Length: 312
Image (tube, rainbow, N blue to C red; front, side, top):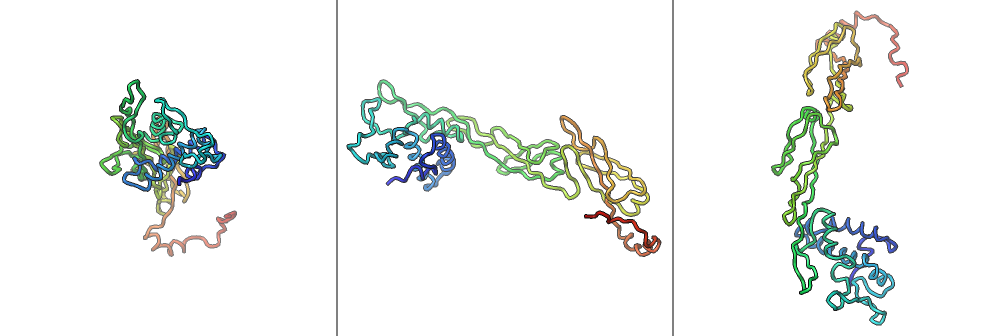
């Protein structure tokens, strides 16, 4: 006995035609044999939900099912209830359920084409002609798109380059590509149907965090360690960044947390170029640590700096 079509599609008995169609599209996209090759269970389930949709998408059949005049397979429950068969174009009798319900085969093919660029089954359609049936080839259809996620370091994202996605597929990405940005590779998706063009590959870039360098829009922020001696005496620093070489002079008395702005030394974009913000971080060297006791003895005791006021 055929299963309840509402249960198969996962919709309520009061579902609208639009809700029924939407539910079927989602299931068909998941269960279609082209997506699940050599999967008998998926194919059987696909046939069940297709049969359920065929019944519920036909207003007459759905009404008769809801009133108990036909069962879930479209068969009459009561042969004296008036029936639901109607004459077809050749003068015979057609239940409208064994094929595609309220939709023609061309309509079903169009639905699957819009779902994921694949045609409906057998590769041929049949149209009524004056001398019987005339076969014609289904039209070319574009192949399905595929999606990838590509992880890369911030340095790579800033410098640009080429990455291997596997299976001989390489993607070239520009300098300054952002986290979450997607690249489109035309014709690198699944093969087309009936001579149609191949689908596209969509690559989403995931930029991994750096321990010292961060990006904020087109601005770059960098934490630079300096020794206590350099902080006290001043120092000139040369940096070789992914965006180019820069030089920075820190004056004598530079404290940890002091920030310096270098204009137009950030990410160069089409609309504007960002800035580079360098933050000093004092780190005691091994030599400074070894002489820390001597240095500490020369420092004044008891001076109230009140450094931790309003700490929290």
